[in-house]
Length: 191
Picture 1 (cartoon, rainbow, N blue to C red):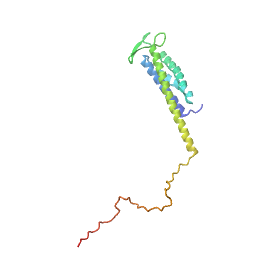
Picture 2: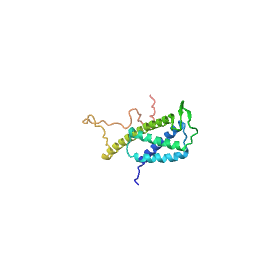
Picture 3: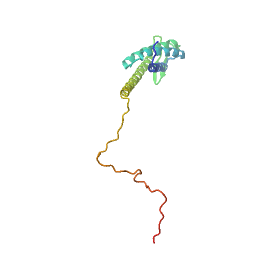
Picture 4: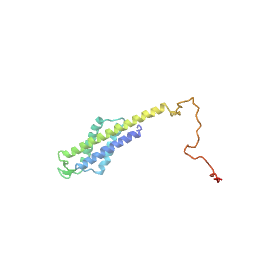
């Protein structure tokens, strides 16, 4: 079994959390139910799909279809494991009537909610992928420059504009300081 890098594991875990979280949220908002045991099935399933695909940078073109397939799979998993209270359920959610499951399949609201989850998740993950890989490319360039020239730059003091002129000695004390030390002189009475 090959060793998986921590970056791959982190990317697959982030993909899994976002995909499963928004899928569950969309399913609940559209009137469906999700049993906690189903999450225990969905989490490793999504992670298993995401891990082999996290080896290189993915664009929106690659992320969107993958998420669509996973959202359909999650919806089927949620629908098969949740009891249906009635043949047709209509719920009022967020100011809109959304139709839930019917005997023929998911209602319009369920499809819209899962579609919203797919698009939002895909955009979010594509932007995150672009930012992560841009950061890694910049880091690689910086590390390559450091490895090519490991000596830190040496800064020389600027040259004097007039090197032929003798330098005037300067006092150590600043000009505005009083440099007399000791007790004050006794005032001599004037005669």
